[in-house]
Image 1: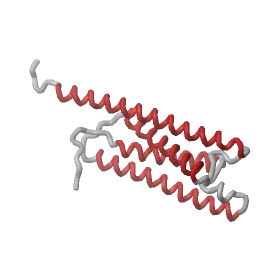
Image 2 (image 1 turned 90 degrees about the vertical axis):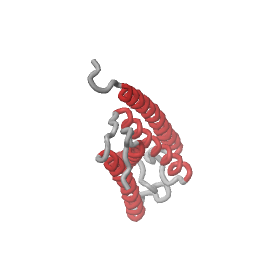
Image 3 (image 1 turned 45 degrees about the vertical axis):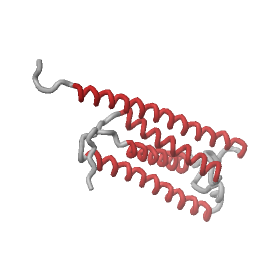
Image 4 (image 1 turned 30 degrees about the vertical axis):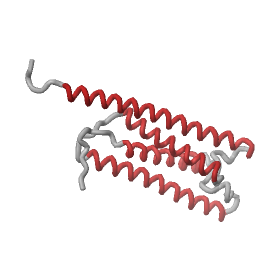
Length: 176
């Protein structure tokens, strides 16, 4: 079944999935590997033994695999629409939807993994009384990205609607 994109609408779901993947890659690469502030289950299994480090590394790999799937899904959705019909390309829409996805990633990961499940904290290299500050900062950063992304997405949609209306009202043929 082929689906057309008659109005050239931007593939919002693709941008959000792209942002989710980028947010996960940033978290996994920068916070898990480069800074080594935490691992996926480091609050439950502190990486103080080789066995716990192996377990954390395994879960980090599962986490990276999930973020990779988000990127593949984003590209699939984009390709499915872009190669069949005209697509409205917009910097505001791709930035907005990507920020929405990344912000959603931070909010969900921060609320569920850091607070609800307590499987790790943003920065486990600081004293335990400072971890909440880092966790809340991560959540606020996510909320700010989600809000900024939503505002960019709205602006891009307004711009697209304006361009579409102008195009539909443009005179046809040589009237001039």
